[in-house]
Image (cartoon, rainbow, N blue to C red):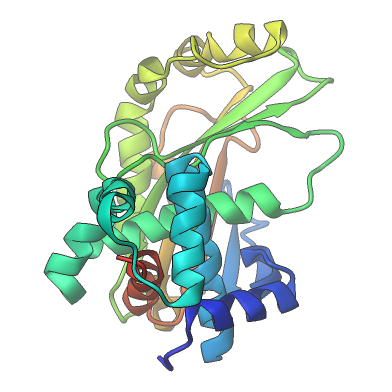
Length: 296
């Protein structure tokens, strides 16, 4: 991958629209299946496009981890874009936010597979967040990925407000996986995602706490009953599996066996799949890490 500086990456990202969704192509698949899915082909072989996407993700991660605070986020960002190094207590402060995920990547280098998984979770989140919304089904809640890829609980939750539904809302719990093999056979990773949701989704939902969230009364009532809706297999509850993989491993058929591994919810639209195909997923994840670590 050509060496594109953070400042150059930001300039190209701005020129193309400033979002990961501006660098992708989406292709709906599986209309004849129980589980429909989308193939997202992203991050072309252009070094500028890949660098732009890596910068967008690095910047979004740091903004989220630091809550956008001036002393941590803004000083990290200014130093990174100016090619400078943070020193003294500013260096120590920013390291607190970077180390939980990215220090391990520095130590293990190419062998750190957790980094690719973490970047895959952020790809799912940014693709979901920035797509045009359905006016009849606007997003009410979409939480960013967990602080570290191995944290307990579910990987992704999205709540929609649906005026015509029985509860006025619906939700989908997502599990994120990665596949770094070369052959186009990610079936094992996909199967693991569905079996994990099949056995643990209710536990993940029971772990959620909303006491510190500012929510409308009807929203709070809905999210307080997510585990109940799940165990009762209500139509308001759905499941999804997203897999990030190397472009060389892009499948022509996927998620056609989802209903065999996820055996509870059977209402139409209960299952959804997503494949995000990236040229050299591991290499791209390390490009994100490089940008995050530039100022340290």
